[in-house]
Image 1 (cartoon, helix red, strand yellow):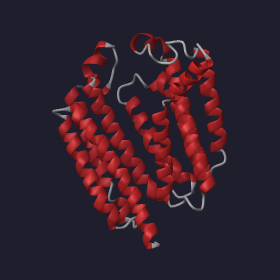
Image 2 (tube, one colour; image 1 turned 30 degrees about the vertical axis):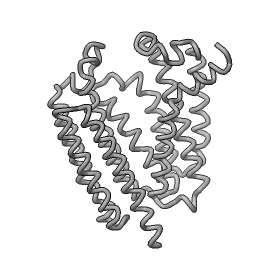
Image 3 (spheres, rainbow, N blue to C red; image 1 turned 180 degrees about the vertical axis):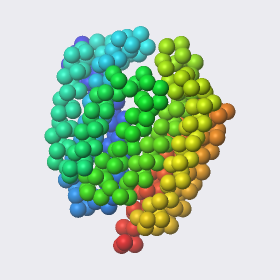
Length: 283
């Protein structure tokens, strides 16, 4: 392999789209907390630390999954020989190290969240990935915590707590629905996902109940005075889309999990626009 192919392989290990998405969620968390202008350096450090940690987590996941990927995903960087297993491990350690250096520049709560997340990323593949429901829950926590991490970086987590909970619950719901969608393939591969462990219908009911709890919590930022009626006007349609997605999942999991993704996007938009509305009105 040439140096160019190796660099390309290292970049692929990080899953650049996932890195960008997670970094954006951290930025949104800081924006929702209202600390962008006064804490620009902390926000930049938090966004960069998130991207590096996600990239490191994806790289180490490929390191642990390299034998499975030789069969299922031979086009990935390690199986095709673009990056050696030792090189992938070293690369992930470097990314984790830089993420830690950036994280220690932040307030104590942000450092604590970063520490928990780094341990979770490392533990996911080896300890949680094969456990029904727990692997889904860890992924959901990690997605939601990006919002909380961004808010903690500017020292004001209040407005982002519900965003964290809603994102985590919606992600958990979507992960369960995706497992239902992949039920036959997962069973053939010997995986023990939640739908395989408890049954398809029971898993979907668990997902629907969890999502309903998240939706019921979504007006809390408005009730506590964090946002005005603009937020409420946007989050209600987002809630409706996600609830419709949960119902749809019983008949068509593929469409249901797709609708959930759009509902999550609308919910995040509600928080962003809700904060922007306060900025415009000078509250």
